[in-house]
Length: 463
Picture 1 (cartoon, rainbow, N blue to C red):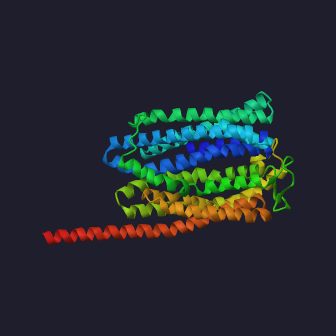
Picture 2: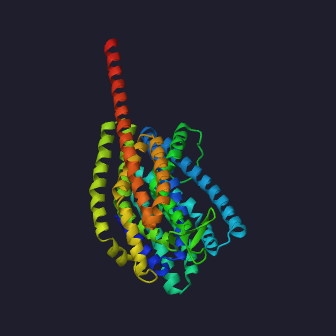
Picture 3: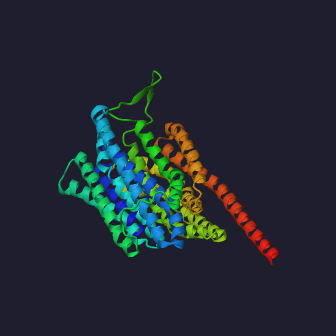
């Protein structure tokens, strides 16, 4: 329920952005700047640290709850220190590039917005890890409620600055950027009471030399790619659109090897991608991510007990539900894509031409819904087995293919070609993961069966 509420508020947030900023260069700047801390949440929070911690934490909690809690606090502390250092270095780089290298006004705006929102990386990643710990304790309310806070803050910031104060668009985006950081502080505060109730008070810990921590660290690196292939692909889409978009400031063409090449896109293409991504992620977030998040602790527990039959059934259940939900959603969104975009977004600064371009892009994205759903289940199946190298390898292949397809499809299909590249690569990764999962679990089951038979034969001989 809370996840659904968050997605509904997210839709209202996007409606507010469309009303006040439309699909303009200003909105392009916001979308790029916000994507950076949001991707960090996927990579270091939900994508890597939380997902690598949950299997090991579940295993340790099954054996010794006190050691499990110290492990969790050590991971939170280490991620906080790492991301705080990255944020400081990032702010320094942004300041230097802004003052000495940025020449276009659009580039300076993107840098300034990124600098304001960069501290959100630390806050939201810690929130994501704490949410993973609470999910292991079967507490889902506080983690699910956290995204609603960000949406409420952004809606309030846009409405207050736009309607209440009548501020110009450039000032509105900075007010929204400050609201992001304030929301991060509130989201962090929300996780503390349930953590205390479950006996995990938030305090610094540094048991980084323990064997469980090393296992979390070993799993974390590959997970950065494995669980976030689609998000990395969409980020590549955004930057491809940014670099290949013409504008009054950049002109209509660029020079390549002495030849003038017409830009395949125009200013606002990043916004069209942003809105289309938000719309196709609505069913993915409500059903796909929520379902995978809910069954992940169960899969981790089955793997810790070496109950591979139950693990196989959980994965099968997840995939069946993914297809059951994703196929009707795909058909429905393809059928009414333009009316959906028009009803939700077409008002204020968002024009009918923007509706058409966003709807076309949305159609190419929703063709991959089944693949996006299946990715969430299959990658977590490997992480439950503490085997993160396979999802990482498949993600690297998928992202590389996506980059190539971006450069090929953007010319005939525009922003829709970028979305098509993401869709095709989602199915490519799913196919590789299914083959690898079947082989991996069968080998584990066979090995476990041989071990049990060997143990029984030894006992018989001793008798």
